Image (cartoon, rainbow, N blue to C red):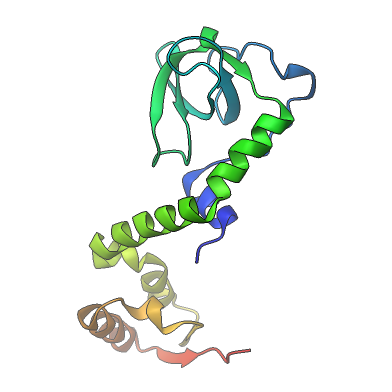
Length: 169
């Protein structure tokens, strides 16, 4: 299971803002990586994460950024969220159902990615000239399928490397 911090790091999400005196004030045009509340229109009262901007509008996600419902909203309709609203937003994004959905999404992406993308870190280890030994903690870094496992072992052999599994604790 991926941790929230790992998912957030992967997606560039930072929702631990503390607005202090800014809570309830209009969000300035161009602001992003903040949690805000919509004050008018169809999304009035909804709290979301401003991930980016499109022209004069903010792209606001009402759940996990990039994976949940979003809206393209004018900045003038947004105010900075209060600490309570930020905590509620974080609880929504951290919920077990949402975490499971995000993990399933990333598993699907990983399964459909080309070998060089999925195992870029392992390939880098094989190409490191100053080490003859490649130590891995988990055999899945070698491949998700039999073909990927064979490709990884071939790369190790061509590089003249020895493979070792790290001891489990």
